[in-house]
Length: 472
Image (cartoon, rainbow, N blue to C red; front, side, top):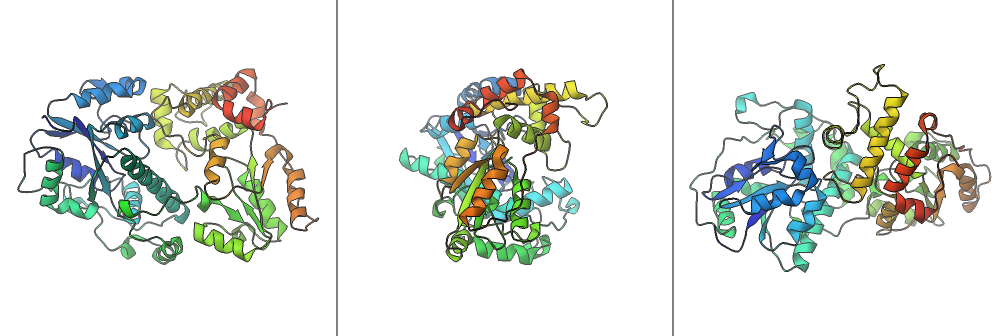
């Protein structure tokens, strides 16, 4: 197919109808969509081993090779791309005017609830309505806000990059997917003369019930959506400018004018305990789940307020991520990333961390493998997202500055002293203790090789913040 485009990309997210859109794109003669070609966990589809002869291992080593194969495929071919797919590919396709951009959107709360139901039921696609599964789910408000932040940040990036490069995209809302004329319009946009008379409706809409019947804590969700003060979320071109990053994770004391702006994988539990004790309260009395609006309201109500964050040594921080998110099986771990680390990066993670064979030597080897992965990941050499739990603290602080920088940047190892200084800033001399306690597990495996690996991965943090060796 000759025309203004060599290939295409469908920018979408999970549970936005991208499978249905792909199925109908493939109905047109000369158009082919190859699934999630750059998903770090698989290639195309979960059970596939290659796309057009390019394997997942080959794609991991050189994503441009797969991009070129798709570009020169017969007809006009493309793929779906989500915000957590291989970041190395994003610049290549956004900067290429020969790549047609299709942007699929859906009301974020609808897609989020659909995702949670699919997780709970294990049913990700539906071809026979009699086999439909449905459960009521409880929405984690903080998780949803973080989900929304990631989606909107990505959409604003797309919009900005396309505007600045003089490109345009074909926008498709979830509600448009049932309109055959919109599908034919999409084909025309791609330069195809083919048209269809009917949609392929083999895939059935899942969970068509009203939101109030799908969400256990519907009242809480409704109140949270009002607090977010957002409108028309499903129309990407009208999105408000991105919010200051991580604001939903900020924590304010129950009474005292103190705001904690955490860096992910830091000493959060220690700080929260200290803040609660400062006012003689419990942890549940702390103020959380801020939006920009509610945070500004809090600041106005607390003249003389002070804010702070806490740096953690890069090696200790990486170990916290490893111990809490990577090593465990189940719970709040990153299951897909864990699988990718084992398969693609040869990190020797065990099937069962509690098994007797996973001794201290094996634990150290797995952690070292994770540190080596972090070096590649933080330098843009892997398809896996740079997650906030292990992103450099320098980058996280720069992100905070888009809203406001903290008044104080403390260090975990000197917290007891630093928090007394913080107390003095608000006229308190009777502050609780917050002694630093060394990570005993890390202490038991620590050696020069681990320190060197951490320095290789987090060179910017070591230099920017003057970190010495962890055991110094």
